[in-house]
Amino acid sequence: MSILRPILLPSISLLLILPSATAAQGRPALPDGVLHEAVDIWSEGTRMAGDLYRPAEAGDARLPAIIMSHGWGGTKAGLARNAMRFAADGFVVLAFDYRGWGESDGKLVVIGDMPERGVNGEVQVLAREIRRVVDPIDQTLDIRRAFDFLEGEPNVAVDRLGYWGSSYSGAHAIWVAANEPRAACAVGQVAAADSLDLARTSWKDTGIDIEQYAREQAIRRARGEIAPLPQGTDKAPNLNGWAHLDKVVEYRPVDDAGRIDIPLLVLAAEHAARVGRPR
Image 1 (cartoon, rainbow, N blue to C red):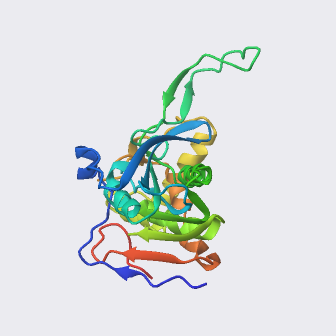
Image 2: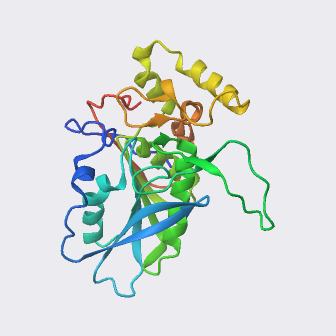
């Protein structure tokens, strides 16, 4: 199946690159006929925070469902208004924060040597939580756990699951369409479909060869020569948070486009500052 041609939205700028006004103001008021439930989703042993919206009059009906995730530096709070609209139109909607973002917990990195394990494999350690790090591989795992969660919801028609991602998660919409067999359709809003292109654009004024730098960091990190956390130059200029650069530059979901066999809608922004023009 061929991908739909991108739709240009001339008045839209790149969404969720910086914390949104919605996030600062809290969740907007629920519209009539929509219920909200705060839920926990577990991804690779770490708790993620989710907002589950559903029509109040759903009863025992099994409804189509949408998974929504935020862009670079955003949170699920920025998705609330659209999520509520979808729920008002009859969908079950799950919006969530990736691990290490918003209200979700982050992965832990042990500080110092690992102590001797107890009888049940338990240890007491000093650890640091990884927060505000963009890791596209981890994020795709988080999306799959969100699909798992929705499969267990009694009101959800598991053969009618869709994914909606904005900005950096718009790239994940392409990945989902190509790699997640449970997805019936996907939408990528202002999709950063090529992370290498995004990295080159974002770091172009630093004078750094971003591909070489990312490879050197990966080697040094694997050899224990630097901390396992992104740091310093890994902070994306004018973006919220740090990048796991070796993973970012290798993540190119646009290369998977030829394998997509479900409906995929890509919404492009004519004046997006960081996401390249559709090609």
